[in-house]
Image (cartoon, rainbow, N blue to C red):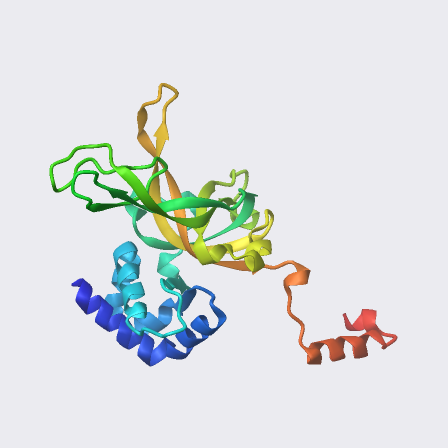
Amino acid sequence: MPSDEVITKFRKFIETFYYNNLLNTVKKNTGALVVEFNDIAKFDLELADQLINNFDDISTDAEEAIKQFDIPEAQYPIKFRVIKLPKSAFLPIRNIRARNLGKLIETDGLVRQASDVRPKVTVTEYECPNCGAVLRVDQTGSKMREPTRCSCGRKGKFKLSSKRLVDVQRLVVEEPPETLIGGEQAKRMQVFVESDLLEPALEKRRYPGNKINVVGIVKEVPILLKTGGQSTTYDLMKEANSLETIEEEFEEIEISEQDEKAIKELAEKTNIYEKL
């Protein structure tokens, strides 16, 4: 599906189903528009299918469609986040394979490790000393990439003029024990979380021991040998698009005034134990 067509479809989709959500996103400055997959499927099945199988390109078009609304108070770019994928897109960690690379999948698991939140370079711009051209390089790997050649013919030795940073955190997520059979060992996977998903208010949701649901893209990570070379074998990781907590800590549960009143009334009763 051509990019222009995808952008047009997403613009119409947001106008029809999510315009108020977009305004609310801008008002609260949350940095992301969260969309339920089922709403996209109801709107356009082909678009929903492309979202699962070619998420990187489709989500870029979706974010371009969001930009076109040009809301004055908005701080762009606003991320496009998807939740509640269909059952067919759910995969246990142990079943993730090379054929799932680049695809959007949903996984449940327990957070076993969580690194510190650190800035990561996502885009760099270099200036050519010869002609002054600005060369943009997307930083997708673990090693900083530099441009090799300018259109004027110059090779190498370009001056770094600017870089774009985002916050990033690495989680190690393990299969929940209730999904294991007999003496099976729980499998683990690295999950990388970034940008608005790392707001300080959401930090408790990523604590080790919490059970989470992660929607994200499967990607490969090169394994480096002790000799300094690169192995022909790759590791698999997941780049999170959305992250929700399945089991929250008590302090995370929100209680309304009505709930609080009912709890206090129950606490005054002598047979509260039997009622519980």
